[in-house]
Structures are given as C-alpha cells and as structure tokens.
Image (cartoon, rainbow, N blue to C red; front, side):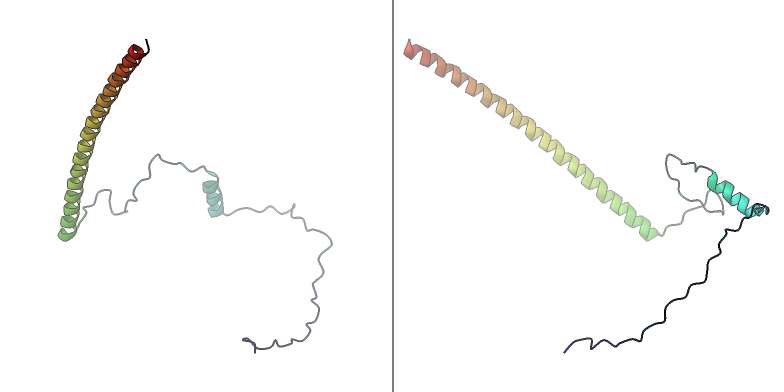
Amino acid sequence: MGLFGSKKKEGNLPPLEFPELPKSIPTFEGQKQEMPAEAAEIKQAVSQQPVMDAAPQMPTTSAGPEQPLFVKIDKYRDVMNNLGKLKKRLSDAEGVLAKMNKLKEEEDRELEAWHGDLEKIRTQLLSIDRNLFE
C-alpha cells in the first residue's frame, strides 16, 4: 500500500492561444521624452564615482557632533574589571615568555658545551688512533 495513494487523472487541457504579435516595430523618434528633474538628479548621482575613505567612520547622529555618552555604573565596573583581568593575564604571559627565553638561552649554552665536549673527545680519539697505528 502506497503512502500517498494513487494519482488522480486530470482532464486534458485545451491548447494555449497566444495573441498575434505586430509585424512592425513602433518608432518614437518624433517624440522627445524629457526626464523629470528628480530622475535627472538620480541619474547624475548614480553616474558619479563613489569616494572611499581610507578608514570607515562611525555614523554620527543628527542631534550634534558631540554628545555625552551615558553608561550604567555596573556595566562600567564590569568593563574595568575585565580590562584589569586582561592586563594581569598579559603580564603573566610576558613573565612566562621571559622564563621560556631564559630557559632557551640556558639550553643553548648547555648544547654548545656538549658540542665542545664531543669535539674534545673526537680529537682525543683521533690522536689515540694515530698513535696506535703508527
């Protein structure tokens, strides 16, 4: 048994009838069409190239160039607390980075010392080898 049932048969539709198209194309050369002033202004504004500033600017309100900004004290305190936490984390990260640099310098010194020791051992082995086979 199908889920959607059987298809219903639709009756045959009559053929579509289209109106007959005109044989000639109308010309409007004799008529001169003038644009209204508003359309001319729109066309002129669209045809101008937009001027792009280097950096986007914040939108200003029409009430005045400088308006006082009011922020709730709770929000201000939250922002100040978050900034304090960020500063502390930043200083912690700088401290960790300084420690890592110090460890890296110590590691480099140790590696250089090991390379020096290996070169000493190599030269001693070569001198022993020369003495034995002469």
